[in-house]
Amino acid sequence: MSMKNSFQLIAFKFLNMTVYSISPIGIVKSKADREVLKYSDEDLKLDLDVVLNQGSDLIKSTIIINDDYIDCLEGIEDFSHIIIIFWTHKVPDKARQIKKVHPAGLKKIPMRGIFATRSPVRPNPICKTTVKLIEKKGNTLLVEGLDAIDNTPVIDIKPHLPFYDSPTNIKLANWMYDLMEELKILTEKSDIDKDINPYSINIRSHPCMSPDQQNK
Image (cartoon, rainbow, N blue to C red; front, side, top):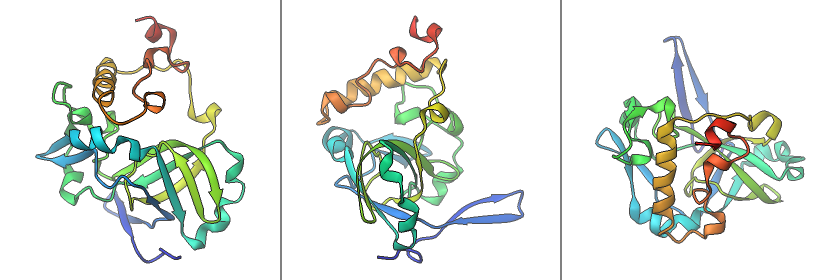
């Protein structure tokens, strides 16, 4: 299977001089086919129906790698976790112009600049997620925990290295704790198993957090 010419992305224009283009190296196949967060009225909208009924579909996904890049997968099976970088392809062009959103589409959380959020709606809608690699088979990767819907273009894959990717003594904005609590409440009503719900944990107790954050 070849996807070389099936999809090309104009990534960004830098100093009005150079346009960089990105082509996918693979594609996501998943039961989840609806966006949890989407652009609406110059902001983000959280689709509660998707949260409540599609959550479990996001747990396991398959990534199919373009035949041209199969050799790039050699050795990836030796890692338990990998980083998936993908393009949120359903974000309309006009959405890439907005500068602020309500994080996770929750109106009770004050608007923040896009770069202070994990919004899928961005000037360049590039997202990344660290996932558990369950199996590599040929040009396919079975992963757990990828929050990308069906047919999402994958633009890069890297191994997760905790000594690079998991710094310690982390401080978060106070509103982020409020946001995570709201998402915990919402997802507890969904079909996601509590044991694998990423929002069910107490983030203040995470080992990466700084002691002053843990003790608040």
